[in-house]
Amino acid sequence: QGPVVIVGAGQAGGWVALTVRSLQPDRPVILIGDEDHPPYERPPLSKDVLSGKATPESTYLKPLAHYAESGIDLRLGSRVAAIAPDDRTVTLSTGERLGYGQLVLATGMSPRPLVIPGADHPRVRTLRSMQDLAPIRQLLAPGHKVVCIGAGFIGLEIAAVAARSGCAVTVLEAAPAALGRVVSPEVSAALVRRHEQNGVAFRFGASVISIQDKSGMAEIELAGGDSLAADLVIVGIGGMPNCQLAEAAGIDCDNGISVDAEGRTSEPSIYAAGDVCRQFSLALGRTIRLESWQNAQNQAIAVGKHIAGVPEPYADLPWFWTDQYDDNFQIIGAPERWDRVVWRGMPDDDKFTAIYLDNGRVVAGNTLNNARDIRPLRQMIIDQAVVDPAVLQDTETA
Ligand code: FAD
Image 1 (cartoon, protein in one colour):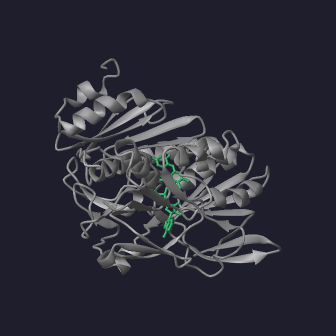
Image 2 (image 1 turned 90 degrees about the vertical axis):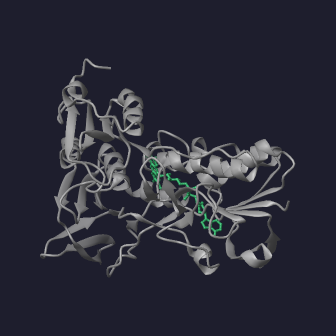
Image 3 (image 1 turned 30 degrees about the horizontal axis):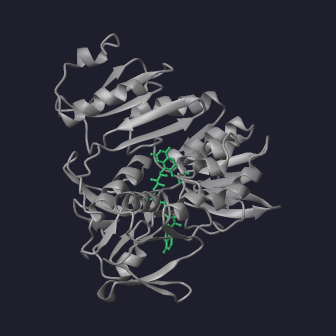
């Protein structure tokens, strides 16, 4: 058995390495990452690390020393430039070649760039990695004007931190609602109202056509003639899986690296895990590419177990959370459709649960400051339960 080589030392890559070594302590494991930090969790970057409540180091999966102590050859600041499945090698950007027995692609994703004139203005920023933080934090000064382009999770989380930092925040969204494809219009409106109560302004149906420099500030021009000046522009318009290495090696990709139930790509000795990969979900009955903390960890652990010869099926139901202001919002399930939403509580309450039904069956749920409802909801979705809406609505029912 040759070494296990892992490309991408993020959350998924880190968990594959830790899992293989814990099950096969003698197996050589090489973890290659192009960042300068050991594997870390990204969710706090747009929350407590951005606001200064948590340190960057608190996001590390394990302290740096742990990798050497566990016999993991962690190579930071190192980029894989190509993979060659035929002779089982990877080539680093330095030209160094490494052989592998099994290869794992855990390359994550990259923020989708804004493709308009002026998008390279120095005040236009995206947030994906630790190195993106310093310039953003520097510009979150009280009184500064912050514009978030995109009302997705990252845009909304940064809007919340910026508002709490005393910035004047505007969110621009091309669609008619925030989080439009993920939650119901009523849930979306409830979350937007909570931002508005914190002073954030929203403009839906807003199409940004260019960004110009105005005395160092970014001047955002909208279709229709309006413009907004900003000290900081955050672009949060989604991401693209980093499939380039796989595509160049002829591995099957479909908006993500396609993998089977074991996490194997179309090349049997190459696996993928995390944001970059697309897998059939037994729970949902379709292939899905998830961008979530839970998936990055558990899918990677499942791949590590397969590689170490102790396979265990990966069948998590999609689960996602976000923290904005003092609110915790969670989503369980990822339905393609629903025909009714049942509320436990009211949209304007500080705490509610919204339960999505399709043909009477529970297919998803959202909780605001009500995380205790997630576990029973998960079970109902797995069981494809048909529950009387009156019972679901009754907040006295556990
Ligand atoms: P990454 O963590 O992106 O790791 C991939 C790594 O591979 C990166 O370090 C990359 O630089 C490296 N790499 C890529 N190509 C190469 C190469 N050729 N050679 C070497 N290295 C390479 N999820 C939630 O569930 N809840 C949240 O609240 C939440 N908040 C988030 C907030 C932010 C700001 C971000 C960015 C993400 C958030 N997520 C959240 C999503 C979650 O963090 C991701 O799903 C998770 O990080 C995915 O892990 P990954 O290992 O697949 O990818």
